[in-house]
Amino acid sequence: DLVRRFGVDIVLVGEAEIERAVAVAFRSCAQVVECSGAVGIAALMIGAVSPARDGSTVVVVSGGNIDDDDLDDILARYP
Image 1 (cartoon, rainbow, N blue to C red):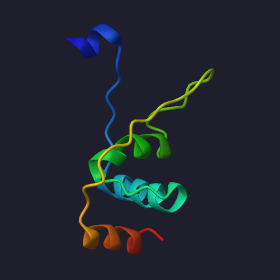
Image 2 (image 1 turned 60 degrees about the vertical axis):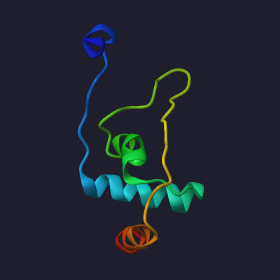
Image 3 (image 1 turned 90 degrees about the vertical axis):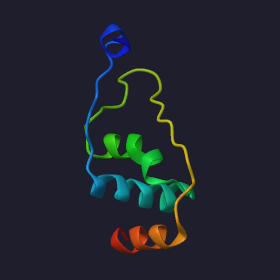
């Protein structure tokens, strides 16, 4: 109901796009982000959502609870 009331769009992003966003956050921003926390970055990266034309665009990036081995694997796949 809130989604319809506030006109919120829902978009889908794939696991590969999310993993690439984890790598970008790490390499570009020195942020360790778990996959669920990188979904917003992924949506912007693939163009599923667009930045605001005027003003600021905010993406909530949360959660650093990613296994070290998983992060290493992602970083190896997306250099």
